[in-house]
Image (cartoon, rainbow, N blue to C red; front, side, top):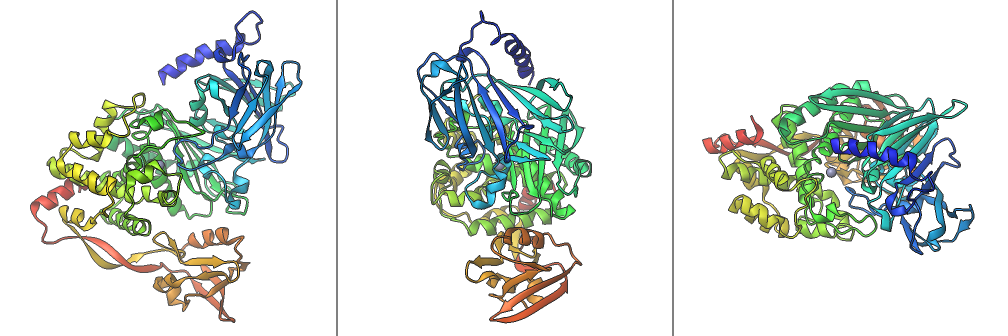
Length: 624
Ligand SMILES: [Zn+2]
């Protein structure tokens, strides 16, 4: 971070005296690309953007918006949201620009190119229509809120990816502005209505790595040890505030810092929470995206407080643990990322799996959750992972993650990926008498490699095998590279645990991660067979194939199903509900007060015959 401050000082000088002086060097390769976003000139939900590079000496240049952004493992096509793309020469005349593909424009006569201007449409509005970036990486343009994932607005010239960028964002003076990137100056308009804030990015990567949020936000800053946490919350109905979430985030971060120990991290970390209203044009891809010093989180505003807090812990801790991998430990595919034609690393088991494992394990290890709650999470991950392809090689899936059948198994990185992390953790502790672990291995790797030194994708597993134990090497060979499903009971046995039949807590809509409601265009929405295993609905006599006509007075259709069932999912206990069903033409009204739904499932319990070794290994694993 110190390095960045030094560069910022220098760049300000560049920006201030560079391009305006005729005698100075005006070459594109040697000047920052000047960019602007004007939130005061939004037309039809579209933000005007200008891109002003220095002078080109080559005849043609290519300008692109990212097809894929880092950390998402899916196609976003940000070029799809660009309208009215225009290139201008130094006299202000339009230059021909050819759109080569969704994300790419080529400009001939580039020696005359002065600037580019276009409008950007937001991604949140069209999420329901299918093809759209995952909302934590997307953009929002609304009168009272702007989610500025800058890679959605600003692109790059192929030849100038390493160039510095300056960015001016103009917005009404009363807007709250929250940004992980340092601002380098501010200017008020003559009438005092608007303020332009200037920012600086050392290279295009920093444009993609530093999201911003503008508008009617609520911001809280607090210290956790030596890290400043900046929590920015947009809650459209003011249901939640940054102040209300502060204590949860503080306790979580404190526990994470303790868990990570001496791993070096950032002096400041920004959390942007966008709460979705759950309407048709609201974002529907919930979760978060990691950056080096920040994360953007999108969740439904309709969540109950307790559920929102636990989800924030699960999600934000996951993003923060990404500081270890891939932000520190990663391969060349990540380090030299190509936004237009990326290649993918074989090691999603590490980037997403180990990260998710840490996000769950630290909670029990640092006493934020009980062992029983942790076991429940682990069993939940096993059951969800079995609904995906359990015989797919994790390294093959990873390397081909944009293609089928791998893409539709991506969700397994958070399920089986985390379980792979757990198994290796147990094997490491078993072979080292509790002295080494998954975390200590990741620390060794981050000392060997780290933010500025990628590992070789094809050899890292061999390397880890050599650094660890035969049992770990065999596990990689069989279950990570290989296609043999993991027998989890063997790992539970090592730590003196076993599975037992039990009644487990569920919710009103899902069994594990599978919805108990389905829909088709002819029939509409209906309960599936799973409803009969749900104690709440089964207790009210609801049956498989009952068509859901109305929920609490709202007619249910395929169009509003997501928002209706999001609310059902979030029902508090003791709430009066009324559901109108159609069973083979007969109308059935279900009226009740909600009670805790249970399903038949499995529980992990301590084996009463466990040996001292098994118990000790469990204690080393969970700090019990
Ligand atoms: Zn992640």
